[in-house]
Each structure stands twice: as C-alpha cells, then as structure tokens.
Length: 393
Image 1 (cartoon, rainbow, N blue to C red):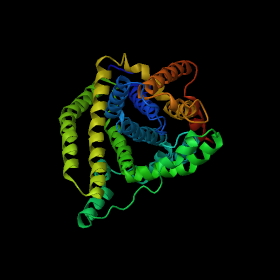
Image 2: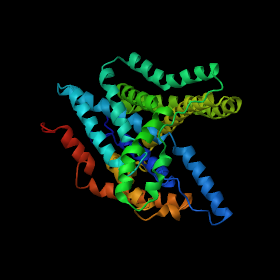
Image 3: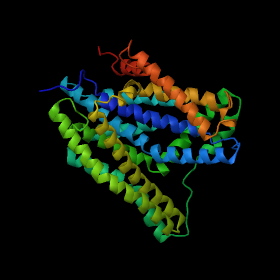
Image 4: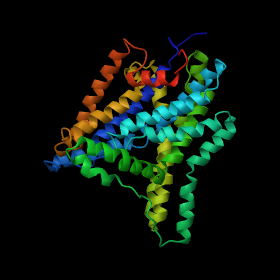
C-alpha cells in the first residue's frame, strides 16, 4: 500500500487550520480588533477601495473561517480521544482539564481583545464529554438539531403572535468598551475587556446563534474524523476523501448560491423586527455552514491534487494556531488601541489590510523557523505539558 504522508501529522488539516486563522486575523485587522474607529477617507477613490475590500473580506471570511476553526476543534477532540483509547485511557478527565486550561488562555487573550472566542470554545467544549461515545446517527441528529437554531425558531413563533414586541437581547454592548480602547491607560483597557468586553462577546454569541452553531460544528468535526474524511494517509483513503469532498462541493455549491439569494429575498419580506432578527440568525448560520463546507472541500481537493505545494506554506502556521491567535490579539491591540500606536486614527480598511498581511507574513515566517527547532508552538507546548501533567507525554 502506498503511503502518502511522511509522518503522523495530517499536514492538509494543519494547512486548513492555518487558512482559517489567517482569515480570522485579517478580518480582525480591518475591524481594528472590534474597535470600530476609522479615519475619514482621504478621497472618493480611497473610500470606494475601502468599501470594496471590506465587502470582499467579509464575503470570503466572515462566519466561514470561524466555522472551519470550530469544525477542526471537534476533529482534534476526536483524534485525541481515539489516541487515548488506543492506549487504554479515557480522555474525558484530561479533556475537561484541557478545556479549563484553554479558558485560562482565553482570559489572557480577552485582556487584549474584547471579541475573542477561546472562552466560548472552552465553555461549549464541555458538551462533547457526554456525547463522545454516541453512535454516528445520534450525534448527527443532535448536530443537525443544534444547527437548526431551535431557540431562534421559538423567537420567530413568539414574534408571530406578538408582532409589536421587540425585546432587548443585547444587554452588554462592545460599544461600552470603546472609551477604554481609545484611552491611553493599558490597565483600564484590560479591566474593561475582561469584564464588559467578555460579557458583551458572550451575549453576542448567544443572541446571534454562535452557541448552538459552535456546538454543532464541534460534533460535525467528530463525525468527519470518525468517517476518515480528513485522512488521506493511503491511496485508498485518498480516493475515499476525494469522492466525499467532491460530492460535498458539487451539492453545496449550488445550494450556497440559492441560499444567498433566498435569504436576501426573505429579509425583504419580513416587517416584524424581532422575527427578522431571528430569521437572519438562522439563515445566515445555514448559509455560512454551506459556504464553509464549500471552502473546505475546495481547499482539500486542491491540496490533494498537487500534494499541497502552495497550501503547505500555511501548515506550520496552523500547527501553532493558539500561539497565532493570542499573539495577534496582543500585537493588534497595541497597533490600533489608544494605549499603543493608535493606528485606528490613520488606517482605513485598505491600510489595515496591508498591516494585517505584513503581520501574517511575519507570523508564518516565525512558524516555519520555530518548527525547524521545536516540536510544538510556544503556547501549544505549555498547553500540552499542563494537559498531561503527571504523565510522560
């Protein structure tokens, strides 16, 4: 049997994870890390370019790269659980401890960035413990149920019977942290980010369907791992993966196109504000799911066509995704916020995107250098050692 991989790592998945982190980081830059403060465009040309780049970046990455990251989180859980079972161990307790460690990393990240997602991942990750041994059909049924956004459908039904009501959903707002983000005190920024910023981030995740969507994607990642649809370690496995992802792309590409126009049509037909808000959450989450799976399919199929000659550049970057994510928040806050360089005053979308690309290239170069000397990324090493404390891993 011909072996296609030289080591145990799934380089295609590493590259895909790197692609997801890249998209997240570039979006964060043009958003000024959730500090939506921008200078006036110097000309109509610059304004048009800023608008076009903003729309293009959000169309390509918003809600999609985040979903890829969540999908691969579930896949990683599957790999770790499977490897533990092969050693005759139950990964449950280690995984829960690992989630608590991730929560700690999330709080560190939250000190710099009010919109961070690690805290959300750590909290939702606990749902994987009771379902980890469910059979495929039951797990898929639960994943579909969560992706259907049941709470939002309850809101739709409620609004149908109470069309004049529009209860407030966002109790905490990121706008409440803007004075401190733009101020010159580092410690005031940290304090407001850790409290108001995190409450606003979690409030937003609940109100806009990210809680159910994230849990669903975690479970879909487990299922894809069980079925071997990321595993191209042999000729037979590669053909199986190619067939599956080709079918996914062929089916979901037209579905995604239809969903794009369908949701926009539905939005124009709904006049009840509370119902419209919930339907936007539902349809956008489905649209992002389909679009994300198209991106994953295309990425993997292209990777396997040419053995990832281009995509492999992102593999080391994807291997240290935790380090990438936390470091980009630290650097990004210094670049754009008031305590640092205050680039929010001079950088519009175009300039911010160029800053993001420059930082991306530095991170990728660092990742390539780092893995020539070390097995894991800096924060990944700490996470691994603390996860397996008391064990020789």
